[in-house]
Length: 273
Length: 273
Image (cartoon, rainbow over all chains, first blue to last red; front, side, top):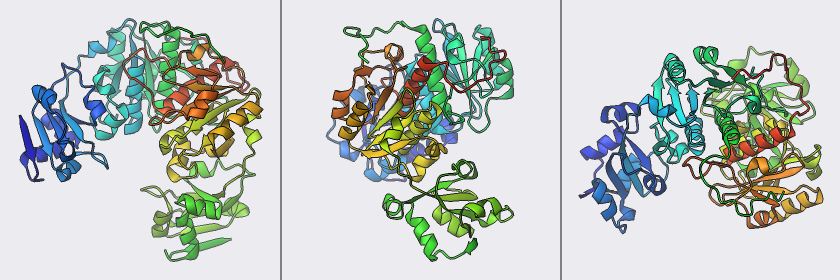
């Protein structure tokens, strides 16, 4: 099915615009991903409500898309209204929000969980999910994190929302009991930490907790942590931002777990430096 | 000296507003840092042209500031015009641009240099400098990087501009010859890399090269690299953003160089995880 929409007062356009806010996303149980690359990453079993193309993309063959969900061609004005970007992309997809079962976050063997504790900066939150995706980890988000379906977070995630098991809107207590139930100790990044990352046992199942730059870790999660990790900073900067700290500790976990399963082409891998 | 400025047509306000653009910054050889925390980080030997306070900060004691440079009290409207932030901070400082001698970047023993190659995203560039600061490294920037004195880059740097030796506006050839002259091999982060970070010799002097997300490394720098490093990604994300990649490789260099000089409090540092 292919429908053309010109008018900004069209009912479906109004619904799409409402998805820019958390309230509208929750009401309609849907969110929008923008850009061809990200739209192409939507897994086959992920429910898509519709695809949106801007007029400029009319030459595209829509067949493959139409087989999956209704396709709408939006006037440039309508596309600009729906998009969260300054330059709206040619392709957007309206996706349903999945319900991830909490157990999913602890499924991998051993679990590698990233706890995002009140990460309110959208760029940092999205980047952390992207880092968890790279590390084959999962993510627990506490209340107080940015909304994971907001355009800015989705942009920083760069498609990782489709790859990473994410459980959001948790209280600190829920995070703690989930980790306890799944025998996964919490290793918290903490400025007062005394354990160097390489001395922390991240090769076993673990949940790496990152607090917000402004407020740090929730008291409960800090208390429940099995260890406080200090990211070494021999220079003068007093801290890293949340996304950098998370990236570094996830990398350290991957390093400790190497060789990991994904096959790399190792021909000629002799270090040349 | 304490001067009060109300009018937006005041000549000094006009100069300050011109510092929002690269052209104005170069013309006046000055840039503005915003916020009390960053202003407090300006080293004693760094030339400050003036301090700017908004009216709301009139209760502040300006004596310490006045000893160093002229102090201006700006009306809220004037402060809002000068600031690059939505909510202008109470304190700004107009700083001179220093001329860093290229040799400074290779001064540490052994050198740890971060090459930012055409990093055009201001947030990524600033974050990379902050990561270099944390790692006690220096930074070489090629032409094509965002302007390091722009408000967005300065914000992401969070004061690190005052700590890190930065040589900017270099051509790829200049980067290569600087590294060669200082016997510092280039280790480039590269999607086609085959050397794992922990197999690269980052404990010896090295220059870690990070290219832009959009364009990758300059051809010349890629050709000059002694090794291509692959950041391991056992998950599904295809890449990390430039800031994350840089943070991870700088951390790996710090790890390989540990124990480093800065003293940590090691009492009770037995890993508890």
